[in-house]
Length: 96
View (cartoon, helix red, strand yellow):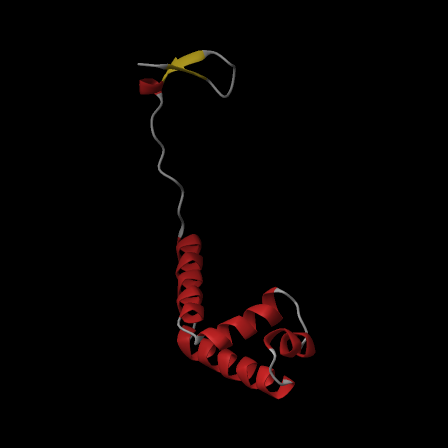
């Protein structure tokens, strides 16, 4: 076996003497991963223009006016896309 330094004392130990420990995954962690996957799936299923509008407002922190200027659309269209995108997201994730 190849030697490896012990994380505790700096002594060398063989890799074969180290027992693999499975990662700790509790129910809460699994539930969070499930929720995260559901949200990502819902976001990816949005039409591209709604997804882009939501991303600019919620992830980039842009105002509706800034998004309208960036996308060269009216502020009313930005608000419509935000409303429709949020509605679709809620429908897509159900009762998380």
